[in-house]
Image (tube, rainbow, N blue to C red; front, side, top):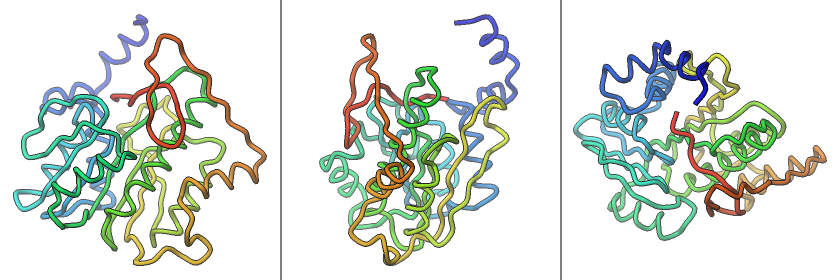
Length: 252
C-alpha cells in the first residue's frame, strides 16, 4: 500500500461519510446520487444487485424499496448478510444461479437491476477497460430475461474504445439510455454509469435474435479491434461467462 494511496483515502470525504452512516463502501453514495437524479428504484420494487460484494449498493437498495419491496444481491464472493435482503453466492451467467433467483422471486419479475461490478484492476488501462466493457455487457444480457417491461438497469462502465457498442445495444432494449458520472466517484477515475430506463416490451428491429454481447463483438469487429487478455499467475482464474478472464469485482 503506497503512502499516497493511504493519504488520499484518509482524506476521502465519501469514505468517511460512508463509515459514519454504516455503509460498507463509499460506492453506496454513487448509487444514492444515481437514485436522486433518475429515481430508478421506487417503494415496493423488486431489485437485483449483480456483483453486490461488499454490500453497499444492496444496503441503499433496501432503504429505497421500503418494507414492501424485495432486494436480492448476487456475487461470486461471499458477502456478509444485509438486513432486509437475500444474498446469493453465484455466477449470474450460470443458469443455476438464475434459477435460484427466480425461486426467490416466486413468479415476480424484477423492476430494477443494478450493478457496480468491475474486474480487479491490473493497472493496464486498455486491458481493464476492455474486460469491464465485456463484463457489463454480459450483465445486461443476464438482466434482460428477468427484468419486467418498464424496468430500469444500471451498470458501471469505463470510458474507452467500444463503449458505444454497449450503449447501442442498450438503446435497442430501453427507451432512455444516459451516461452519468456521480460526484462520489474519484476525480481520477474514468468510470461512469449507464442508466437505462423503461425496458421496451420488445427489442427494437435490427437487434432481434442477437444478444448485447453479440452486438458488442460486431461493433468491435467494425472498429477492427482485437482484444487479448493476459493472465496473471498470482490471481485465481474465474469463469464469469462467455470467456475466461482473470479477476474479481473491485470493492470500491
